[in-house]
Length: 233
Image (cartoon, one colour):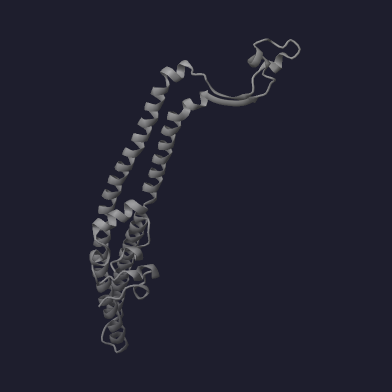
């Protein structure tokens, strides 16, 4: 049984994975992983926020004509002499105004609003549509990247399992050689050769560990959530 985690020289965050068990059986099914990536990926979140900005721009373009409409209201007070007698009061012309509320709307529409507004709305709608399509493109790219990194992570795990076994076998040979050297059963040259073999095996093992961890962290970054939240229950 191959050890995994700190005993194998790997950081503590990889203790959530068991090198002796295929990653595909430890993590959620790929379809669920894809859904998680679409929901939590920082790139998708950013692009969706741009869609919201574009939607707001479309709404502003549609309502922009309202800035040319002004409402007003007032209340007038007078002696109603003009209303009651029909004879103007020469001493108080302002008092001739009848009592009551007055409301209205002042509309001033420019030629641009008449002929250019529809083009502005179309431009805003096109920008919004482009942002929405960019989300689809980004989701397709993330799906392709997820397929690649998922397979790379599985391959790296298999290579790690093989290299850890090879490293342990080489370490066992090295320790036996130390005992044989002490008892005079092997020469110093043979011991040097066995030591070199162990060092080379260990170096390759460390490189494979690094490749595996790199793939795990790339996978987490693409998913937008830590790997422990992606394991099967």
